[in-house]
Image (tube, rainbow, N blue to C red; front, side, top):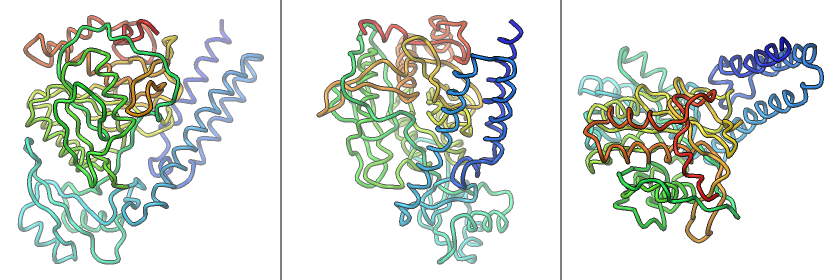
Length: 414
């Protein structure tokens, strides 16, 4: 029994130690030096106390490191391949090349920025939300990272950031999946901020927020298929990617939230992850103040990844995924809080032109939670009442699932 307790503590140490790694090391500057050291020390300790059970622990450690390595490779490749549209910001996060965002701009601040060589590309307010912003072009020849830091020094107290990119938090659907039962009670409206949705009979409206959008995406279409199978009556789609390598940026997502608010969408599902951004944080808070419930996935970069946003913004319903055996996905990321879990593997969805596809990832758990909240919102007055009702149907008691697992009935017939 003592060995088992120590083993559990050792495994926990791996996952608790990893998130303390600096953000810039996690994202693109190579793997952090202290992560392998920490992992190595924990493995040595576990070897001393656990004997033959070290093998599965070794696999867990290997998975954590593989996820961290893959994340670094993926982001580095994106910036290298699309340097004309994407570059690193001051936190070593991928962002829209050469553009800086300023919240609550006034003419004095904009004049100061112009004198420093920043050109005003756009100035205005997000549609449907009480959020004012300006989009600025950095001085000629200057890097984005240096430009953000310089403008913050020039305008102290102003909220200034790069326009960081967000990425889908689920793998590409694969062939030969099983059908998802449509046995859930039908009802409610859910907005999907992702790529373009194709083939959905429940799509009430769709709008693009990137060059070439809306452009049908397998990822977004699979999410819409899950919502249909879960009983959602109406779906609104916002494509923040289109054909733009710098799609999925914070401003596009914020604009999409504003559009959803104007359309009266009560629940929005976002299966995208990225760093914290002040403009997007303000847009989320404004939408919530108007009664919208925002649901977001925690991502699939593992426990060593930095906290996922928008899942980590206050009040956002953060969702992780479980497999057919009820186990939290090994690749599931983390947020500053966790609300629910839902099926994220051992299920499938219909994708236009490809038929039924197998799914895996927290991307696919988030819309299932959104479907349950939306179904309840259709029957009660407020978001708080809907969440209270959803809590009553969550299966509780499992570790790392927040207030419980929702939508297990989605597996009926699998």
